[in-house]
Length: 109
Image 1 (tube, helix red, strand yellow):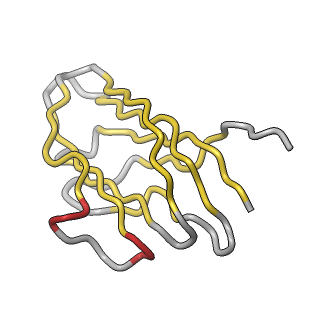
Image 2: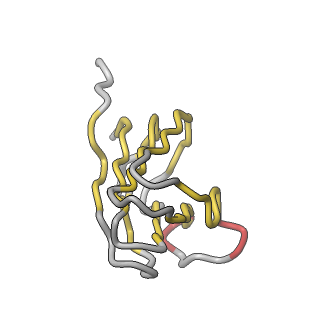
């Protein structure tokens, strides 16, 4: 079996609203390879990224990035190997509606 990296989630959430970017399907695991955050505005903005184990809701321990600033008309990319189990949720939060999020990775059943 060959693993293929694919788009797991895309979102341009409303400002100051936590949004589920990706939920691992039941009976599936996932490996997150890359997160991209793009600021489409000329002014700086901040974002948050959290992982909810089993979809249990976000608490302070779940944050990987918290109010990380992206300058205007810039992007943030991180390549990582986050491993997620079934029903885990990747959440994003943006200080401005000018941010776009893209999540890439592999799903395994």
